[in-house]
Image: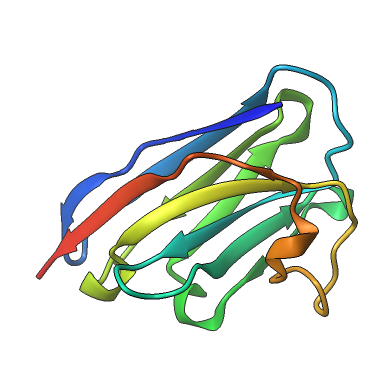
Amino acid sequence: VQLQASGGGLVQAGGSLRLSCVASGGTFINQGMGWFRQAPGKEREFVGLIRWSGGTTYYRDSVKGRFIISGEKANNTVYLQLNSLKPEDTAVYYCAATRYTLTRGSFARQDMYGYWGQGTLVTVSS
């Protein structure tokens, strides 16, 4: 199974981007897909998750109200709409898929995601 992320690029502060990620290459248990990001010199951090069961979404606090996750389980596809971008959103964004039905206590844990994409770079200029 491979995850392919796309949609990154250079955008001015206040602008928007839409990231896409599709999983292909085999069948796997997919209970949710999420996004993480890694800024230069920092550790990778959780951004958001869509849990297919009930369509529940979770976000890190700093992106709530600005980023929106959506997706299609049937197509193993997840999107991340990034709005009102800030320079501190600059990072490589990674998509990931999990076989677990994650909750508030686990959705940010990277070890709960068994499949990862290669990352797409988002650069926000001031």
